[in-house]
Image (tube, rainbow over all chains, first blue to last red; front, side, top):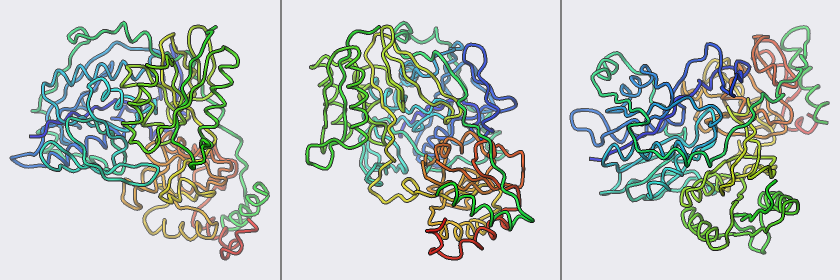
Length: 267
Length: 275
């Protein structure tokens, strides 16, 4: 059976209005009233894993959700379990102000969690997180584990023994490659979302194991992390501008006036 | 102040006449500017024809052999893969989509956008070597004729468009403007349009001349994909919609009426030249 790890990050919901974001003390980012979610591309990775697993009595894969962060949220973990994960293995970390950009530390921690799993054939994760937008953890993880890497997958299928077939996005369009396992594959939104979960799935999820490890339980050499890049400032850029509201007698007239203004501005 | 930079610039090769592509030329210029201030050397590697895995392995070898301590690549789909892949082999930190690279104290500083561009961070590295992908002014290039990424004009619809039928009407406006049709995330999630049309953190990031956002509220997710458009036009019934904070031009009103009015002035494609 294919053993799959899905690495997922908890982030502020990127569907929140941008003006809610605030930079607080120690460069922490908050957004009033905005819930945390699994980063959307990581949710796509979970969907890919759930599709490979299949449903029913004899699944084709075994899926472990791996997450690293200061506040693993049980409702999100339960939702992931209801969306196709068989168990959760989380690493609780200290609040790490200013370390927002250091994907290498995160990759080392995830590598330790993969090690904790024992066997793992396929590591899936999103192509980038919705907060840091970096896209480095998957590739760095592949480097640390010393296994193959495929980025920006838009389709993944089980192929022969020990291989998966991956459709990936490149500058030349979509190419299909056969990828030997073990491997890390980063996933794009084209794979689709896990979608909403129903009550029976949620009830079943409550019987699945959630294991939360503390950093001290894993042999992590955090001193090396000090070499990584550190966030020293974080500001809201002046994206906001004064919008010129184009009016008219009614909405249709405003539409006509709008075309004229667009022409003036781009002329 | 850091006194020496040994920079390896990596790129896909250009058109075959020995010239580097425009995006790499910008990265090369940034590397040379840095070296002219702090000393050191700039090497260039164009591992042509190889897979990204082979490119990264070759770059890692070059770094070890040539004592390079900074690898710079353009932040393209290719660069976004090769940069962290190379860093993974070397065990170096990696930062992507950076700008304003400079030397400071023992390492480098640069800026990068976070939360889809709603925030901009300043990052400082230590003395350790690292791999950085740099944003360039070049448009995203694809060979697949991906019209959304390269379109000069984009018409995008959001939840407020109401359904697949609404997108049909928007497609008429897009055609009249000579624009590509796009969407925010909710319509893609709802299956009104294919996910390939999505603009945002989890979709395309576009830089058109004109971006018309219809029935779009202006989430972090969407803003990330379109805030670099030269002229942003918002149409929304809600005068408090966040999108109006980022738009150059706006109309508050029922979008079907506004679009009908726009089409009055854009009767067919021949009118496009006047717009």
